[in-house]
Length: 289
Image 1 (cartoon, rainbow, N blue to C red):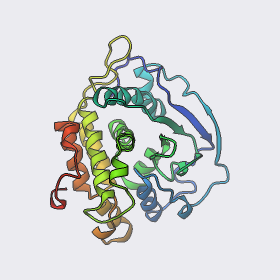
Image 2 (cartoon, rainbow, N blue to C red; image 1 turned 30 degrees about the vertical axis):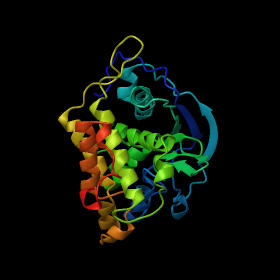
Image 3 (spheres, helix red, strand yellow; image 1 turned 90 degrees about the horizontal axis):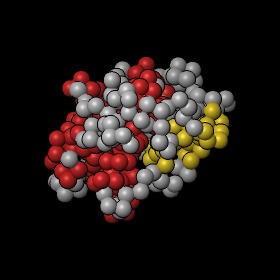
Image 4 (cartoon, one colour; image 1 turned 180 degrees about the vertical axis):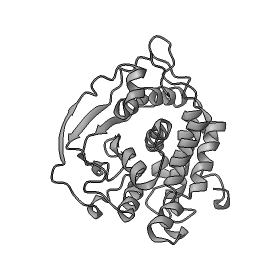
């Protein structure tokens, strides 16, 4: 259990958008497809053109996340868990960053159009700077569990969410402008941005039991060691070397955009232990990444 059952989480601003969920095992299959899914994970790019389409998917209007009022609700359902966690992540950054403005969280149901391309469980969760919105489809985690042997448990899901919120922090603080993403290689801006986001996500996880609801009840419990291992498993799953080894059998560091599994786990742990001040991945030599 991650949330305290009696925590009040109904004040979140997350909305549901889209309809016709793509089901893992339906139109999506094969490790080659999973490699594309993972390439999209934690990016603002849209590589969905490489994937099968489902004519049942469409962009719909926004609606509330129903029956998502307590920590018990968040513990019971992935969509409510992600929506509720936005309260804690926003509260954390409001305390850490002067002038912080929250992004818009959208829980995707099937697929929806965005300024950064299609959002769905096929493209994976991403942050879109153009509309300052985090898009995340909870069924993506089921797909990873079923097709890629990732654990995808509650804390892994919250790590993914916190990683996307970290990209928002990078955007509003000018890090994106100073170190433009889009390049590749083991010492690239792209890799450093992703590792910094992992570190900032870890910093939030380290403080996740400190944010409270209007009654002073902590939203979340302190993570257990097993839950931390679950988050580290997610970080390893989306390492460039792991993705390449599974999808092609060959590791090509010159094409990396996110960092290796070891690097992603290491920077998450740095943030978890030392907080956001330790997350300047642009201040270290490439050999220290």
